[in-house]
Amino acid sequence: MKLFYYTLFFIIISYLVVFLFMFFFQRTFMYHPNVNSYNLAPIRFTYEKVKIPSENNITLESWYSFKSNQNKTLVFFHGNAGNLNNRIYKLNELDKLDLNFLIISWRGFSGNAGKPTEQGLYQDAASAIRWLETKNIKKTDIILYGESLGTGIALELAKKDIYAGVILESPYTSMVEMAKKFYPYLPVSILLRDRYQSIKKIKMNKSPILIMHGQMDTLVPFYMGEQLYAEASQPKQSYFPKFDNHMMQYTSELLTALKNFIGSLK
Image (cartoon, rainbow, N blue to C red; front, side, top):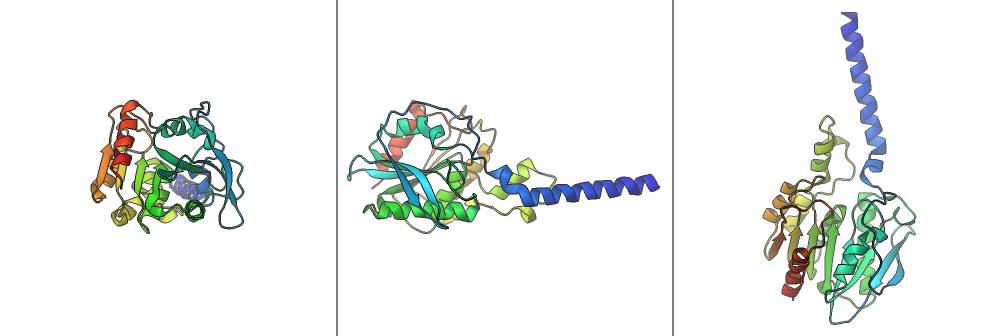
């Protein structure tokens, strides 16, 4: 009988240790600024390195490519890992479209000061929009592009204001649902600090939206992209390739989907 109680005590203590560890260190599992395993490619576009002031005396390393006042301006919010260089292969393709673009790096990423949090990244994204507005670029001429984690940040902005358009690549319904997938043994609904409730926010979006999600995504389940698309209001478009994974390949089909969506915007 003593063995049973000792075993039970050990299990309870072990669980509490895991719970406390995940509570205090959860953001180290969510944000990976030093991961550098993504596609690296040579730069084939013209751009200017800019520093965008954000909250808490933080400046954001960013790249700005301007072509014409007649073009829409795409703001690229990258995912939870890597840096600006890891998105070059996408920017090379976006540069072929009739777009200006701005890509920002989050606090704690690309050598920026600070530590990433949900509210902090929302502040960084809003700072990028304000910076563009100082250049007389209106929200109605801005396309928000969210990649993975960045999709929740794009929707945070889009729930408040109307933009020219919103593009979501490999989006999730919420970080709580994602955490349930990876940590089914933990009460993540109580535990999680950064929740990114995209499934709620997409219902408040009033801008045209394109949702792109590979059906073979092994990180964010494809059904989450489907759920978000089902909840989104018109006008909406989708691109759901059968064999693509999480970091989507910029194939001719994907570029056609982007071009068609951008061409449909007023």
